[in-house]
Image (tube, rainbow, N blue to C red; front, side, top):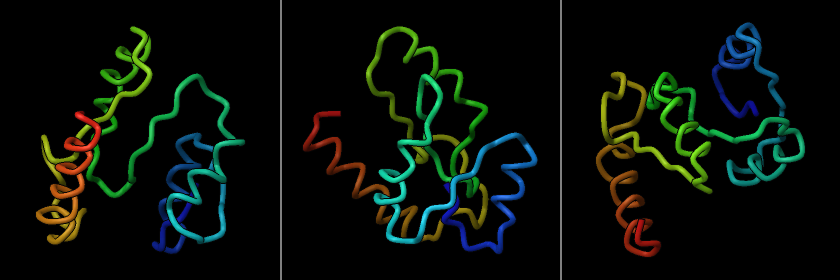
Length: 109
């Protein structure tokens, strides 16, 4: 799914690395995820922004948990390193921590 506004740089980089990019009209991130589901061909779906806030080298830990029978595995971009400029200050220090707090509170995660 390509909803990046970087002039196609992310899309081209993903395609050069062998990814199949599905272009979805801009109607919001949640809608883009839903519209992308029919195109998924693998055993697992691992989602993350391509903005440097996630270290996809750590994906092996997710796959091990899924192989062990877990239905859902969630990482945290607040643990580890976030590349400078990858996430706006308000998202990193206000939005993401608050959203994480409420998810943990309501779903006992």
